[in-house]
Structures are given as C-alpha cells and as structure tokens.
Image 1 (spheres, rainbow, N blue to C red):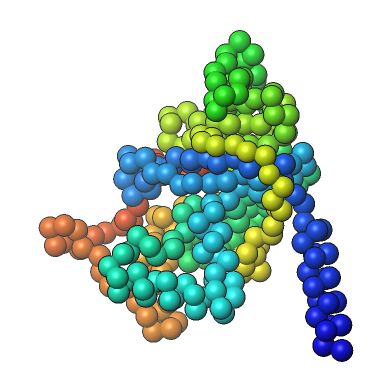
Image 2 (image 1 turned 180 degrees about the horizontal axis):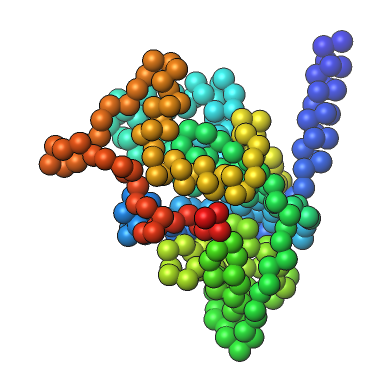
Length: 281
C-alpha cells in the first residue's frame, strides 16, 4: 500500500513539473542601478531572463536561491548553518545574500511584479502594455554576436533606448520590456542611471517556475507600491520604528560622522535619484 501511495505521489509531482511552461532561451543580464543613498554610485545586480514565445520570468538567481532556502524548514536550517559556518570561518562573502529584489513574470496578457519596500513584500499585476516604440533601423550595433537595431520608448516616466535583435524573434527582454520584433539585449534610461546589458545567451529547456514564497506578498497596484517604496526611502527609520514598536523594539538614533544626530532620511531625495518608474508623483 505504501509503495502505491509513493508511486502516486511521484506521478503527481511529475505531472506538476510537466505542467510548468518551458523556456526556449536563457539570457544573463547585468542590471545597473544608482545607489539610492547618494544617487552617484553605479551599483549592479545579476539577473536572468527565462523566456519562450508567450511567457517569461526575469529574476536574480541569488535572490531566488535565498528564497528557495527560506521556503522550507530544512532550507532555513541549511541557510542558518551556512551563515554560522561563514562567520566562524571568517568568510563573510560565503553567506548567501539576495542580489536584486524583484521578480517580473510575464504571461500572454499581463505582468506579475514581486518586490519589497523595506520589510514589506508586495505583488501587483498590470496588463502587458503596448509600448509605443520608435524603431531606428539605420542605427545598429553588435551585442553578443547578434546584429541589433535601436528603438526608443517613453515608459512610466523615463525615456529608454533599447537594442533588439530580429535574429531571435522572441517578444521579451529584461525587466518589463517587450513589444519589439526580437529579443531585447540592452536597454538604457536617459541619464544612464538605470540600464540592463545582456552578458550571455543560450538555448534552454528549463521550466519557468513560480516565485518562491509568493503567498507572503501583499497584493497592491503599481502606483501604490511605488508610493510605498518612496515613502520608506524618505523616512526609513520612522517606518521601521512604526513596524516594530508593537513588539517593544525601537531603532536607536542614527548619527552623522561628526557625532551629531542625523535628521531626515538616510536616502537621497527623489529630486537627486528616483525609482526606476517615476510616474507615481
């Protein structure tokens, strides 16, 4: 009887795995973004795009690894063990850490966006917008051995220049970018504070798996999320104190280098450096 139950469970697992969409390509990107503390430093995160003709998932493999560990008691125990061993061995770089914070999952007609604001996680859906690209067919450059064509678009408050290759006729790209007759390998916002640059590309049959811990994200909409994130950046200590005050925990004062009490936010204002989408103002 036990063997029969085990066999049935294995069949169910196999069916569930086969039901997941499979990617046709895997693209590695370096995502450039500004240091929100000073608006000057260029920071980077490593992302991966898994995509087929209809669906895609853009995510940080390190963040997904950490989330996968935190999704089970056994994984949490392993993460704690790895962290403890790294501390004891003086190898702090060996501690698994999240890299980028968000996941972008695209289906035929919508995006599902997972991200956080401080200690709070949010998820929202939005339709796959028809981006009004302006294609400049006479402007080309080579990226990873593929001939790419330039296109520009105004999207959610920023003007972006992208490079796509018709040699790979997949309607996908980094972050939320899509809508061109070919894979987008590079996209840069005016001012160069935000950009995505492809660093590797290969064929694959990897499954496009669901986001780990998806049930922990609070549902919202795009504008509310952006406002919540900006609010946290403008007053992080106040938000943290408000969240933990009920547990009897407060965050102490933050001091400047000269020993005086710091006032205001530890992040730069939106007038110096803003979020990747700015149309929430």
